[in-house]
Image (cartoon, rainbow, N blue to C red; front, side, top):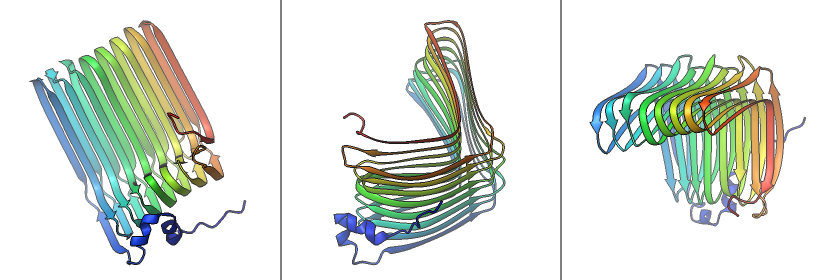
Length: 411
């Protein structure tokens, strides 16, 4: 099938935005970034709490390479290369004897390479290259409070081989990104509590390669994204157990390659090529003796793209190829006495979604190729002794493509 050539036309984007008139006569700032990390990078946090009244907070972050760039009413052109070959790990441990307070917050994040670039009232162009070697990127978090209590808890465990985030406001962007991951990337979260009268949210998220773009207030963007995950394993796992909990939420999400681009403006043009060869696994297991509501959800995908434009046109050209060890999502909940239990397991080989706003005179221009050569499986298990409701969903799809034009939510 013939394909259209994609060219980053910064001048075209600048002409769309009135605010560019003030900056178009000045040459853009040139930024060159080169980062290579060969050794190991690790962070560890341990909190031993007997009893506190207000709150407990813990955060552990480890990055092989991290780079940030921002432009405010001045055009910017970036060239960035990042390479990580060593091991990257972040670890958070919380032990509670009596109480960790009214609120408990834990954040654990490990990233091989990270880029954050933003523009306000300007044009941003750039070429971003990231490579993660054959070692491991690991995020681990564990809470041990079998006799402890807290009013509510939020625990987030995140791991990414390569991650790029772009933000636009009254701005335009023309960027090309390339990501290659060969590292085993895993997030592993666990939590045990005796009593939580509020919400207990435990989340594990893993992406071998991840690109995110957010545009607002009449912005426009053109992106070319190449993602390759050649690692043996990409995994997210989250396990929880409670004696008594009001609302338990246990979630695990694992993606070989992921692109999420949302723009509120004139144009969003995304060309994406994704190839995943890793075994991708998402697993959750939750148990509660007494509970008000409890949910366990697992989502695993080889290649995923979500692109949407509110206010203008979405041009989407995608190629997704999934092979290797397969995709698996497993979710389980065991409850003794309670009310509502929900379990969901979802697995995709390839998934793409594109949308535009009909009330904004939006339109879609889509070209999509998907090929899946690997096994895809989803398993959901619900065990309830006594309760009001029990719901389980297991959904496995080799290739999925969804496109729609509709009103914005709330209208």
